[in-house]
Image (cartoon, rainbow, N blue to C red; front, side, top):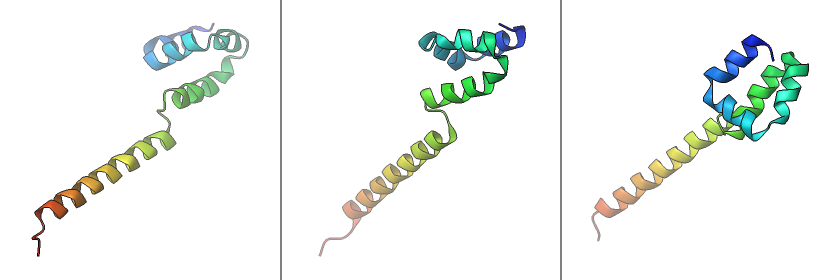
Length: 80
């Protein structure tokens, strides 16, 4: 494996863990070092750290906060 790819994997814990889960990437990166971008993208999707996953998590957090706000408003509203 090329030194720069090895250093990239060693400095990033998620990449190391993904390589352990998907060992086929050892062979792929040895034969095709230019696929490191594909490797990184797949690892981000596996650990749900891609942009769509982050947007989804943020949206869910906003929905929960909105629900809590409405619940507190309903509790504090004067009953007639």
